Length: 260
Image 1 (cartoon, rainbow, N blue to C red):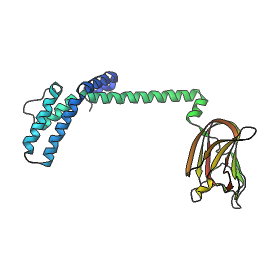
Image 2: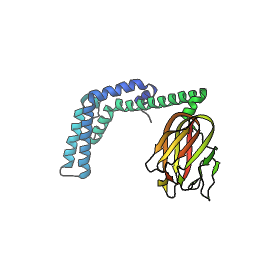
Image 3: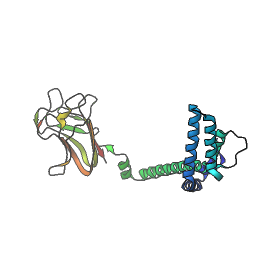
Image 4: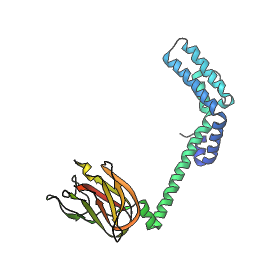
């Protein structure tokens, strides 16, 4: 159950924050020293070293004295170990309230942020598209520069549950082009390499867009990868191409183009 101080901190977090910070600023060193003394006494009792009982009692009492007025009232005859724990707990009440208030503020800030984002997303389609960009390539037609006899030259949707969805012949500058249908704002691309073998064949890999007159390079990958995601934008185009410059094969498992 929550103590009255913690309940007050949850209801009114700002006073709890200021009180906890003030306590730690003025008395943090004393509280840390008290905790160290109490932990040392606990260690003596656990290890049962020579004269552990007298030595641990002295440390417990020293820890209570080090807190002074922060310890609060402790009944006479209380076990020294219990007295040290009660003193430390009483001294840190404002700091524990500070933590509760901080958690309350963090939760309030998170809820407010979610409300602002959801409201902005509901009011603005462009803002929603920035937060949750859609895959522009999903369900769109694609065409390869050539095709291995066992693979198609074109298709719908540049992805497959198999290790690859297309496979070119050994050729010069093999490529795969995706028709996005209409001009879109492209913000990022995700490429998943062939999973079973031969991943080095995709290197280097160019990402190019058609600017109306020629193909324009917007990204290039030269290091080995299994999954490559790259922020390219924002750029505008209705056609995007993935090209392996030089001689060789090109085969990939999935391509996603995110934007709006």
